[in-house]
Length: 132
Image 1: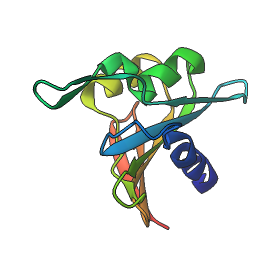
Image 2: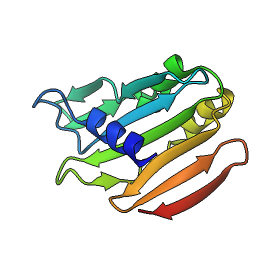
Image 3: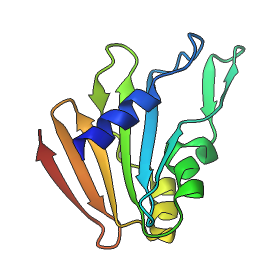
Image 4: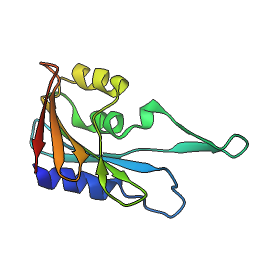
């Protein structure tokens, strides 16, 4: 299980030096048939006139992963901070939570920090936190 969270963290890292977001998000999913699928946060638009980054909710790692995952899968989500490459809170946002419920995902494992992770059970809407 921790291996999948670390794999999601590796996947989250940018592929070029121009991605200057303050964090990166990666997601790994295990489909009902046992296949592994992957996604990371997608494209962002940058407005230099107002120094603002806009992220489309449809480019969230979880949303991108759900397109490949199908119903009844398990998701692992990791957030990596740019400043020191440490792990941070990666619990899905409310929009992603709604989509996750619609896909009947069984469990969502997410990083909290370098020594803790959480498990969200969408069908029960309960969380549990564990220390590594």
